[in-house]
Image (cartoon, rainbow, N blue to C red; front, top):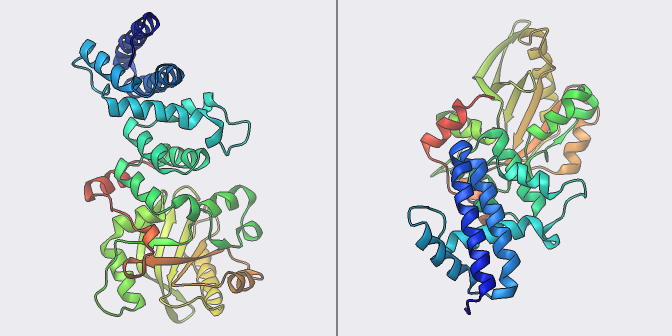
Length: 346
């Protein structure tokens, strides 16, 4: 690359940006670092067409010579900084409504670590999907491993996708949050079976892996009991799984079926919800919600089955290891990372 006076002047400005960033980082490390990478990416992007594709390599050498003890000035990281800026700035990537602008994007990306940002803008197919994962990361305080799992498991296509009757059976202020709380399908890629299995086998493995199960269910789910006992008149009944959702302020009855969806399943679950509302729910709780998990379902049948049901029910499929589609396979977070997710306050 041919070096001229204008490049040297620009390099001085770039070095000043590095020094300025070091001071800011001492006050607000992550936010300042992301702001720095945004500005760095913008400055490199603006000059790339003028000085050619060797610019990043030259800049990396010059900056590392000037700041030998500063991390993040490698050729690779400068390329990420430029890609980061371009991803959120160039119209070709924008599928968003006009009221979402670069200022808002910069505020959001500054709230998550650089490694998370790299993972998102290199894996998300457009800005709309990227902002979904940024907001989810902020809300759930995901580790990078968990974020990677959620992206690979295509959470943005699953969240809020369960068939339900919430708009007809829940108060307006609750129904929207309830809909976004449920997914379809649920991915239980931490389960493994060597032989044919029954519903109770799945249920038991979910309980053996309750931390991972709760992580897949999503933030706010608190486990109450397995085969939870209720007594109606003189008969005993046992709910597969009972949860309490701390954001929805309600109980959630989860029924697990190792078969294709059958309309009669909703009738039984409706009965369980009535029982929980009468025998378990407190006056300050919202109506109990049912979650029916089946191996597969026909969406039209499911919608018809819910049409005249008076209790709030969501119907989803679940996927386990031995029938997990290739595009949904993912690496799992470590036990330590899962524990951190569960410790973080709702």
